[in-house]
Length: 496
Image (cartoon, rainbow, N blue to C red; front, side, top):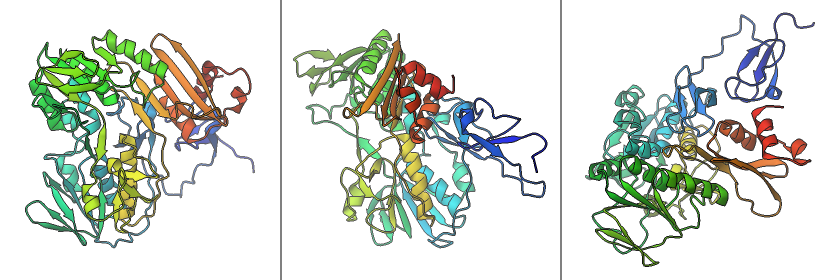
């Protein structure tokens, strides 16, 4: 019998249901085009109502938000509510770890928080303990530069209030150092032992200080913790000569935050252009022009020889005045506990697709974990891995298959997003790009699939680009001819 009454259409990407004779041109939730809608039959009145959405994921950076509606703005990448998609609830299998399994998470970053969130959702009765070396509540480490710039305060930096942990019966041991991992128990500072059935290492990473003479001086600091940021703020005053060593995302954001506070900032990059791990050379050159336009002095191919209490000496012989020196030269995984416990460790703790280490009851996630030879070092990957490790520790069988690496800038005022493989590895790749002022777009294809992109100034396509990469969208229809970046933009955005 033919269907009567109004028709319904379901977005296969995010689950949104549209009522009407035809699907909408764009999904109002995730931005998917009409082609991603399928005919949908509404459940009968007798069928149980679909549970209301209570959790949302930012499709740009991976941040997850609890609530019946998406937030007005993503607190990590500033994406709008249209960039959020609902996270479907699933009924996890009974916990193989047992109804009262003792799950312990070492760490206080987003991987650790995501792990306890997922463990509690999976096992309502598990005994969950979170041990954080830093005092106070876990916070958004990714937002430290926004905090340094004055964009947010202490309240906005905290991930969850203390009541959140209490309400979920999660024991948070803040300011507690784990000394060693033993047989089914941890030794913490002070001689106390904490027993566990399942353990998750979300120990994060520490700032890397290169072997430069004087890098241990009193005027030298790194930016890894909220206490580092507070120390910087205490030292800052207008006109202070600050040298930031390292021109990656953290270096750029730190330099921008210090310049906003009135400091005289010089940014040093050892490579020939800015952000070589996140940008193409042309995008790096555009970024250089913008950075200099906001008053930051930039020196590329600058290698530091020595740091003193008043200056930074370059290998070229140039001496730069420096009251304060900030090293933003990358991080190294915290793996000492794993090594002492006899787990396999390379650059990070080796994990399989279940994020299980070489011990069957110990998992690792975030900056401490190395999966298929990759240390992601990103917020989105740490959040995703933490969730999977938490579910598996609580008895669910969930796999991590890897995700495209993505990067965003939050402080400078010039929006930037890069994702996937944005530099061709050989002749099998095809690159399309366009540019106008600080607007720059670069799309990288292989086998007619989008595998990477860079968006500068206008990042409104970030959600659609990420979905196209993850969904392996076929672009052969436009790549077969004289394709242009504009045609790619129109296709991705759903235009004609």
